[in-house]
Length: 194
Image 1 (cartoon, rainbow, N blue to C red):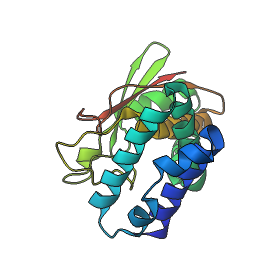
Image 2: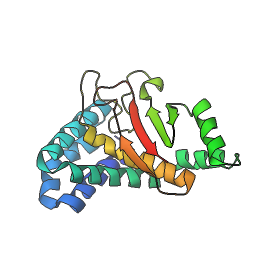
Image 3: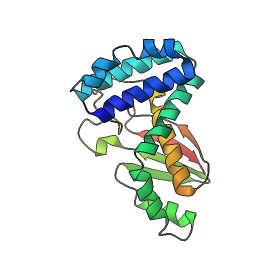
């Protein structure tokens, strides 16, 4: 497994400890050392699924969402290339409306968009990137077909999408999580209130 994946697992444990305390983090993260050292992406995905199930059982939804959203905020800070590319595309247009229309008409690979009034709906389509890909995140990419994971995990992506659009638009946006590929849908859906 890569050091990046090990770092992502450590990030989850650190955020759980930050918001829920060391005891909860220790219980949820049990076995993380084996997952971090695993050479199989499927093994990692199954461990992460179990860890999120434990997290769901131990703390309230609002705190779980806060933990995973913070992970997403930290992820985009380290992986800003998609946002920087979108910011460069944005500079080519005189106004936001024209930029958004261009994104809708020619979305980046793996995305699709719909606009309804002052709401942009963004879809992640991980299956278009490769056979069997369930998620863009390396931790859940290899979750086996037929296995579903808690949408709690997907608040990480919600946090990523939130900071992505805030970086592009230069202002705060509210993002809601809809359906997700790892919890059984064909694609992931995020509602962005512009």
